[in-house]
Amino acid sequence: MPTPKDIQNEIIDNFSLFEGDMEQTLMYLMDLGKKLPAMPEEHKIEEFIVKGCQSKVWVFPKFTDGKVQFEVDSNTEITKGLLYLLWSIWNNQTPETILNTELYFIEKIGMSRMIGTQRSNGFTAMIQKMKAFATLYQQHGNS
Amino acid sequence: MKLDINHIRNQFPILHQEVNGKPLVYFDNAATTQKPQRVIDALNKYYTLDNANIHRAAHTLASRSTEYFEQTRKAIQQFINAKEDAECIFTKGVTESINLVAQSWGRKFLQAGDEVVITTMEHHSNIVPWQMICEEKGAILKVIPINDAGELLIDEYDKLLSPKTKMVACVWVSNALGTINPVKEIIEKAHAVGAKVLLDGAQACSHLEVDVQALDCDFLTISSHKLYGPTGVGVLYGKRELLDAMPPYQGGGEMIKEVTFAKTTYNDIPFKFEAGTPNIADVIAFKYALDFVNELGKPAIAKHEDQLLRHFVNGIVEIHGIKLVGTAAQKVSVQSFVLNNMHHFDVGMMLDAKGIAVRTGHHCTQPLMQRFGMDGTVRASFAVYNTIEEVDVLLDALRKLANLNT
Ligand SMILES: Cc1ncc(COP(=O)(O)O)c(C=O)c1O
Image 1 (spheres, rainbow over the protein chains, first blue to last red):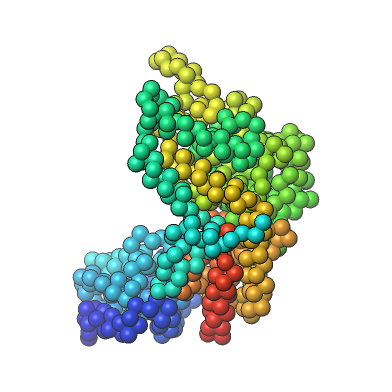
Image 2 (spheres, each protein chain N blue to C red):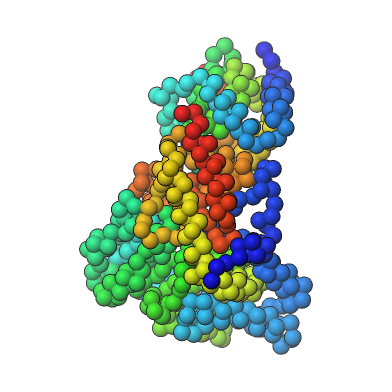
């Protein structure tokens, strides 16, 4: 199982091909978003929504064999692409691994505007929410 | 007069830069306009040479800064043709101007059962302050509906008016749709039932001629930052007899005549409503923005902006998969739209990648978005320094985006 660090480095490598060209970066992100496994509509309920000012994101967690599985989705394609990257890093990792991850790929692929104080998308809130689920599973298992 | 747009552009240093490797195309003017060099210079000069607190001291710098500050008041008086400069109160912006009226006028003059009329297309800043005071007073908020083009239904307005109507608070020009509302008619009808009228002039004042005496509006709110001036400065115009009758909004320095622990008497307008040290530098620089607009003249500005809007609309209706939102007959140079195949947030990000700045989202008009069954739009808004070539850059970009994934 590759570590979050391995995966992030691979992502950064892939995006480096665009040499900072924002348009190509965004187009690629939108393509990546299409690779996300479809999230069942019945899981897109209020409890699992993370609201941003402009885009909505959903995260539905499960805990099996000591590892966390996430279903994620967004109503905007660019956010969805970023979610795909986050999902590829964290899906099927242990709560400890998730909580110990330092996420550095976002800035490195030129998308730092999507994190931090920007309220306009649900991405930052999404990171918090996924970590919160990991904390919950770490403390209580699947209960 | 035909404007020399190149000459105008050269007065705006910020326009001459690249964003994401492309020449900046700034089409977010309804959010805030850019500032001409003379405004930037005025700010610089004030802090370099003139800074002193106003209205209070005997020394030379203080009288100089007071004089400049009051010159802006005179300039804004002329800009809107107020009867006297004391009817122009400096605030932080339109939001504070409306809150001032809602809190001060509303506290004194609204009673349980009274009605306040607003429109479907209000900015949140002309909704929430009225909701707050209505809740406090037991007054009722009524809303004028609109048609699908984004125009007020005046017949419905007529039905809402009654002797219970005490205030009609209405946006002059919609920031999300660009609609110019028939404010003269709205004011006459409100006055006929004895109601006062507040016009939210945030979007109107950079495009349309303003004459508060001819309009006979009771209050008008203005924002400097949407008029080529600095942020943090607004104006509340009010008729003297109303402002005189209204209690102060905030207490503190400047707004008093005499203070004892037993009783305080208040200063006259405008100072009664200007508690504390105001935003002196930005008020002073605001005058230079007004000069800029006056030199070009509103008719010439409007003519150029209308050309930009028409060019954009003519281009966009040719593109399959884009829907215009806001198609009123009377409009300023603001156009909202949505793409069938792409969320407005993605459109905004993709345009930014091409150096094009537009607004996406609900534009602080959520009830209006609900009326259209949308959670947001993309909005392009044009100012006097924009060019047909820039509009073509946007149209090109939209043509490509509308064809993606389809
Ligand atoms: C129609 C309208 N009203 C009010 C406001 C708020 O103005 P200000 O930023 O000056 O508080 C805006 C600005 O976005 C506006 O467009």
